[in-house]
Length: 147
Image (cartoon, rainbow, N blue to C red; front, side, top):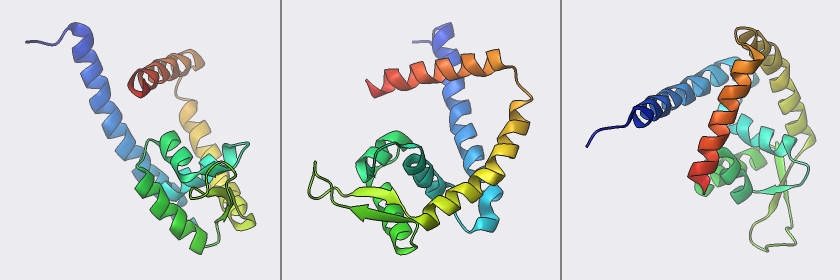
């Protein structure tokens, strides 16, 4: 059995996505290393910062494409560090809701001070049309795999 042209291209895209993920983690860690936080924790802070509602560990895990256990470990560490706090969840007694503390909000703001100029500079290398098309294809792939 052989790949179709589309199957071969999609395989290439998937392999490039794996490589890009690793490079983004490395770049993210380097970008914020002086703040004493990792990309993994940045993702949790970002999920909580961007959400209008409190989130649970499973909510964040789904959003990040991570295991619940990995996010729970991060949440436990970040709670000890004072970056997040937990509160009762009226929907589920055992799955507490997470919120940013003031320290967590300040950390996320400090990260954004480094991130925004960095990402804007990279964005200048691409056209809006190209970025819009890439985003649409990635969203379609994500939807396909989440189904």
